[in-house]
Image (cartoon, rainbow, N blue to C red):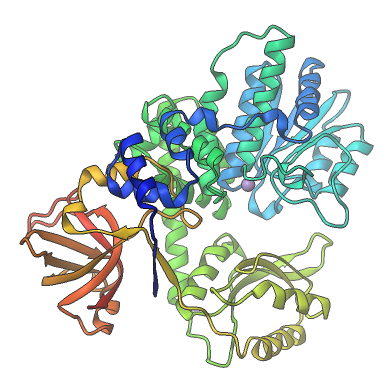
Length: 573
Ligand SMILES: [Mn+2]
């Protein structure tokens, strides 16, 4: 791993230490990650970082159409999605319209129904229509669903699209009221997740009702911010000031114990507080497990329930689903053989009943074997043709999408889309085409090598910096899994005094001492092989993060919440 050590503007750091006020570590993180003026606002007045919703293209028209539909007593179908952002978007829109007295029903599709407004759903809506007036509102999807939207329109059903995905390059934007910052010309709000867009739309609805219909002013919109915050982190949206502000506002409400659902999360997970990393590493995987295991409705029940007992019971169910999901992944991983050296892509078939885990499993295979991985399963395409559908994950330095797009042009595969590092693929169900694909990958990717990973280190620390105060202070700003990772630091010339045995032999637990004789425990989950590989040196430079031990150890009297340095990488010094 390459270490990239950040340099800081000393004057700005000193200014921030005074203005926030805070210690050096947080000041350095703020200095290097945010433009001047933003940290003070984020920590003292996050509301001031929220942008004017009316600047988002099409939002007022969408809001007025929604108001009209509610006023005219339309039956409202909200079409959401099965992932966390889709769940929270659907919750916000349906609950808010329900609060206004609208008859709103939210549909959370299962993964097997595919992503985005489905023809099957549209047909059901048309069949159930009778003499009712109906409006379908999409959240976190819809921008690319031209056929479905046209079908609904032909049957005299209103459609309103709210989304945060790009429009199709060829067919453009559907001819209905649309609020989708990503597909807009001015791009205002393009950093918002689906739940963020839904929330902004509802805010404008509320504002119009207050100004023109005399609706009483309350803080009803702020109750939904925790859901926007969760959606933002789960969808890995960019950590621009407005998103950070939404996350901080949401966390503030949650940790003030003002949200029943999140109170239940804390109770269930036995947590004193929730931060953005809890969203990323615990809540989002739990909720996503519902969709992956074909139980989106369980996630929906969780969000839509008003009873603490029911929520806690559902959380138990979801935790079990997540456990099953993890087990399915681990079992599947254990059965995989190392791909041969000449195969430049790991191509692995998965039972179609476990298709929900294809993405995470492909990610782990790519990581383990340091090459692109495709995990695919039998499926039928939207045109009814039997195909294989798969999740593709690549490694740093290999742009897998451009290879897949070439294969699509040549007719070897049916379809591919996504990004350089993660994509979706549709294969023809044909042995000869599959063989051709493997052959092409061998030639095309022969000379491509993964790039060595780089870790960005925020600054150097010593043992005395590793305190609960510093750890808590660093948690004042939100981090996610990839775009704005939690701060990492490095320590120089750490002298290891003892290696502690640990029940899982892959884990590394070290005792160390600094020059003043101060002792510290360092923990490296799954890092024993790396330690052995560099010859178990006594003196090392170590990169990692400030954390708590996370386990009780009766032999050395370490407690779960004792401070530790969590090792990410190490080098002999
Ligand atoms: Mn989304």
